[in-house]
Image 1 (cartoon, helix red, strand yellow):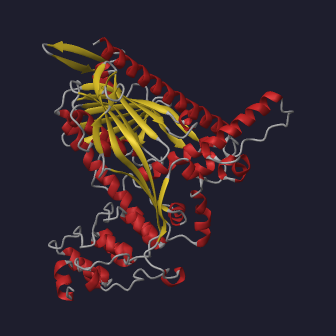
Image 2 (cartoon, one colour; image 1 turned 180 degrees about the horizontal axis):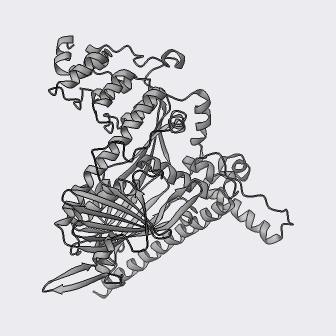
Image 3 (tube, one colour; image 1 turned 90 degrees about the vertical axis):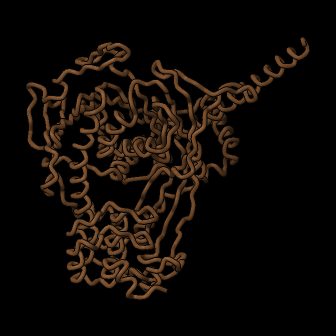
Length: 595
């Protein structure tokens, strides 16, 4: 077991945090030899350790010395999430405030570098079509689609979009352009609202931390403390790519498809797992009861694997550890000794973790001779958009893996348990469909894209209304945008037309139909209802009486119909496959007889 002296020498800041010696910690941070981002043997920085232990003053001092709030521990939880887990509203407030400041300054600092990278790459115009699809019946028809029009000239970038976001129960549509202008290591961003003919201008400055940051409200803090901590991520460790096959088994060849005029190899990404981890140790019994509806038998019906419900690190009663952030009485000598296995014992409140895993098959359409370069031209654009869009952030994570060679003309990736995104690149250089102010010049063996300078300037007649960073418009973080999108989908599924308490996707699927005037049921309707019941019996292995008592009995009428149609389609496809195999066998027999 390591001694106190060894700990002090190896982890001087961590030691002072453990002892909550915040005055000595202040002095130690002034010594530049002490690395405030160093991780201990358990994978925690000094700030992560202070927050997990609930040491408010040590946390405040580390934040004042600009310790990184956006780091994660070895289990993938970030500092904000660990602050929520303590249940301390003051601690959470200061962590959120510093998190927002750091995100803003990081965003400002990164954009000029991205624009400088783009300056060295050839100019281009391309369209990125986003289509949101779902494996849950009926959800897809409620999901939006959008086409991002991307213009790049030198160190200037313009991105046009019509899907702006979500406002509780509806998708927000509009006509916006985001223009980034880079010059001499600095940058300006314009958000152009073509509907209102207004322009927000923002100078990318990192020196004034007060710019662009709204202090977290009491409602924001309260909402986090009364709801489960949720993180969703794509597990990339086991993903492997392989060519999709075409034709009948035994005679299969590698699959190729034409996408927007380009011959593409089709790859499948297997072992793609979308993991959602939920923690609830900070919740009161009332909050837990309210959130229990998140887990219903309908999850199993729709194929969600649920692992480790209510895993806890300790059997200590809640009352005894509610204010104890080291309930297992781990000594510093134990904690800082990498050779000692702590097992389920840990500092902080005993964790109550619920894990849901959904397996997906992502698909890629890769072209060897596409006119654009993924790392030089497209990745910087994705980086720009990932700053403020969780969808682009997930796309960025996916395409930064070791993809097979070629440009991904088309990509299908999971976004949530119920939602996939299909991204297709097209109309390269506006050659398929003309675009104003975009033209091409054929130069020997290459095609050059020419863009008009006015594309990247404030349109004449538009009103500039100040700095975009200082107005009152709400800027959402990626996880908040995820929550809003999930909520918008859920609300779209409820047909009652009234604003209800927030529900999860499974409750929404079981939402009651709006009441209708009673009318005599004719014979045809009765026969149709019998057919639905019989089909659902066969599909779910339930009797009609059992189904009426199960959660699936509350499924919307349209959902029941969709399930029946889906099942019939699968049966039809299977029968076609069998018929095709029989025909092939007959053809082989005939050819052998002729020989």
